[in-house]
Image (cartoon, rainbow over all chains, first blue to last red; front, side, top):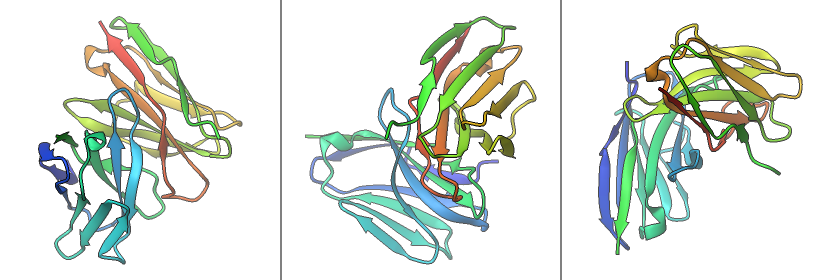
Length: 112
Length: 113
């Protein structure tokens, strides 16, 4: 049972544009929502994370928007750069639990 | 601080064999989690160890097992390998507080022939 659905599967964005990746979850017990970035040959690295008590969190060019009632959250990458080309995973976990449930990933390509 | 290290980085085995993968967490981290990454199933949680005790377990058969040592280093073992076990096995460590940032290692790529 897939508990975190991620879309799109792949995304091509022009340099300087906004990249948007969406995730939806089913389990209302989830209370921690991180986004991970993975480059080929590397393990995933935490990009930014949010908890349900806030609707938005921004760190540099990266913003998470969170809609608790819709059980959805999204990652926005502003002023996308070629160096942002990677695979992005949303994830979720429950309080007191290290287990991360991952989305299926989005391969982002930034073109000049 | 040194990051999470995993050995070996690459491994080729044949069906029916067993394999042991090793993970050294970031110094001071006591929680170690293991994940399997495949193109078809994505990233799936295997298990988590904290202070030498398995604290969480994913939905994998009993052929997959793990352990953690007193220095927080962890090993996972897969017995009676199947072709479908070919994957990137990732280890992640975090500090004592739950839901702290998990830091992933580069993974061990296992190919089962």
